[in-house]
Image 1 (spheres, helix red, strand yellow):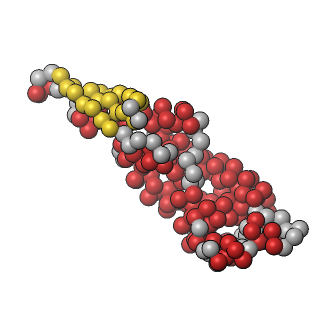
Image 2 (cartoon, rainbow, N blue to C red; image 1 turned 90 degrees about the vertical axis):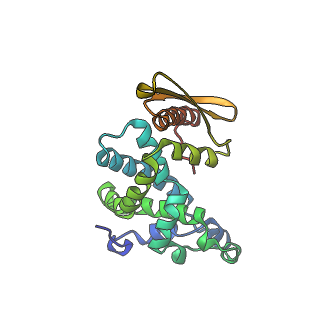
Image 3 (cartoon, rainbow, N blue to C red; image 1 turned 180 degrees about the horizontal axis):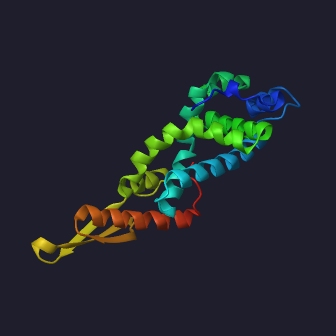
Length: 227
């Protein structure tokens, strides 16, 4: 069950720091910003999400788990969660950031949420922060899982766009009689064949090729979340 942040009795100084953007701290000398907490919160978030996905999707392969985790902890996924939590209204900003619409910036919202996660962890421990994070992200995880795991072609297209790569293109051939055709697919990104697949239909062959290409791209990225 989702609980409000007010249900967690946090250290007041930590919560204040978690809400303190560097632009605010620059105008109030000596105030620590939320950047150190953000670093810790990112690590805690990654652990909690990975653990939850591992348990919630026991049949999911490692590559799919990695892709789902990267999507869940991305700025694009965290920002609306932070906005619903009220982070935009609560974050402390400098005058310049305030006038430029900082309260609605995805990067500020997501970073502040990670800092809050660290504050929950430091104040109350791993069990409490797991409860907090899963309560916030359980519904978005379901939505993301439905959209990202159904067809590797969709995720490959989104990932190449995020990385500013050429969009994937597919070449499909087949052989065999009409009642027993086998299809062969190659997917090319930026002039390079990154994946190959076979299947009993064109769609299946393309999906297998897309999944292979995703593994190649993730290996080159070091499995780092695309943010």
